Amino acid sequence: HIGWAIEGTIGSRFKIDASYLSPNVNTSARLEAATHMYKTPLLMSGFFVDEISPAARSFCRMIDVVSVKGSQVPLELWTFDISNYPDETLLPTMDDKMTQIPVDFSNDLYYRQLQKGIDPV
Image 1 (cartoon, one colour):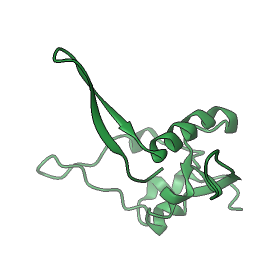
Image 2 (spheres, helix red, strand yellow):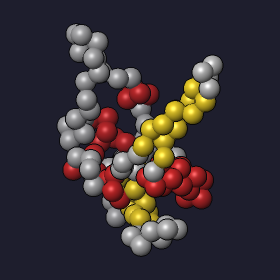
Image 3 (cartoon, one colour):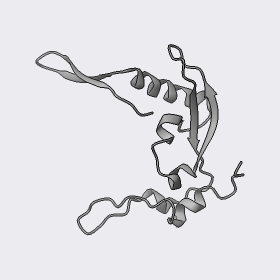
Image 4 (tube, rainbow, N blue to C red):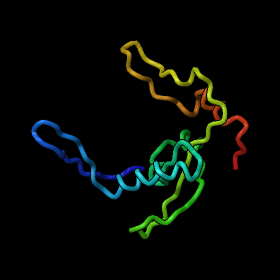
């Protein structure tokens, strides 16, 4: 999910923890909890999917539209489909300064293989 949040510290002078408050944080927690119900390792809101690149979005699939308690706006639930996940894709690509190079979803061959065998509905 994506959205605003307020960060605050809770604790004493001996131990401090960060806490985040927002309806968006609650939505993120609900999405994580719903992964079990939808039997998928990842759920994303439609608001988040709207912000990603078209190439990355091509790997996403909408699986439901739900009503969220306290909101009048329906929430789209999306997942990222993976059927074949080669081990080499788990390793990040680094430049000469050891900075991770972003994935180019539109040209990366491994990401094309991820959806091999999935019916493009």
